[in-house]
Image (cartoon, rainbow, N blue to C red; front, top):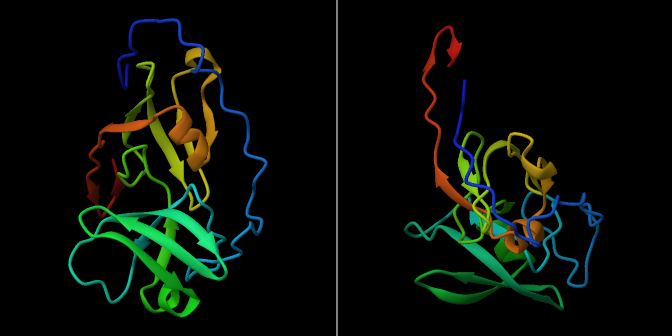
Amino acid sequence: FILFQLASPRACADCTPAAPSKMGNQPLIGMIRDAYGTWLDDTCWVECTQHAVGAAGLGKVKGLQDGVAIFHWDGLGDYKYGANDIFYYGMRRTMADCYGTKLQMGQAVETKCGRQGIVKAVTDLNAQIVFGGWGGLDGFYDQSQIDKHEIKVRTAVRRQCQNTGCM
């Protein structure tokens, strides 16, 4: 049975298999952690988990310098946060598509080349995406690779949970 329909094959030099990230969870130039201990970098997204005023959505890290992180919030603009602010607002690193939609298990995604896949698992550092064996693209993608391949969310796969488990 088919979970999703693959786009028609097209030549696309940029849709090569994703190499595993060598970045890991190492401190970078700004050396700033989120409220949960994960290092931030200038490619990641964050979400506010505490004391939020309204629904700001995800914020994109624009810069890290001298113990300060600059986040860009759609509709709100750029804001600077120190370590105390990050802790107070519960800023948590998260994974997002190239447009800032939070990645979640079960979502259908598509690359800029039209390859379609399913998000199999998500951590704060990477997302495992399966493309049905299409061109060796199955693998773990960090945020810079998601941005490079312009991976975007297409739809969410709906799951029904009952006392007997999820279907």
